[in-house]
Length: 214
Ligand code: DC
Image (cartoon, rainbow, N blue to C red; front, side):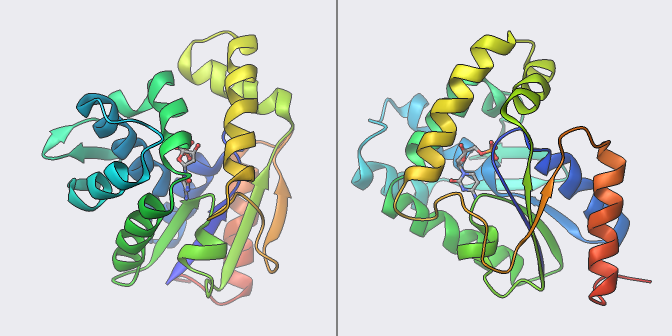
């Protein structure tokens, strides 16, 4: 069973999804870490980031393990490497390809079928788990999202804003699994809200629906 938390980069999805998972005793799934791991594998292999065939084959082959915030690619810890700005940009490029999406969505569906998950990404509520009993679409203003990301990565806000706009355009404009709220998603604007408040709101929504332990 899945609680879906979708939204653009910097909306607070990871922190919120992690907090909600902890509160409800669910497992946290960072779906973006899978696209990031594939992007890193592609960069390391020198694969073309616009080559659907090659990237699709790579997506079917590579071993990606997510374990309590640690990410492993073919047995090596890549938790830090996948957060590099170059990998962020590459991840939104590799994730437009149909064969890549098919392979990664299949892995995600397999994972979530086996437990209780709070899964965050772009297409959890629309594609990966359209039957999720609770879907939240998190947003925040462009300025606030850039501020948060810059604080995380140490880059300047201006640099982050340019990369963020490019990534938003690719994530919303692609044909498959585009970033958009599911028809039955609850929209939550986190601008100016404390993260604990957002977590509490989502947990309350879950409880209203009878989800999670009492
Ligand atoms: O959530 P994130 O910033 O770590 O995601 C990195 C990229 O991966 C994002 O720009 C687009 C892609 N992605 C995706 O296409 N679908 C998802 N469910 C999650 C991420």
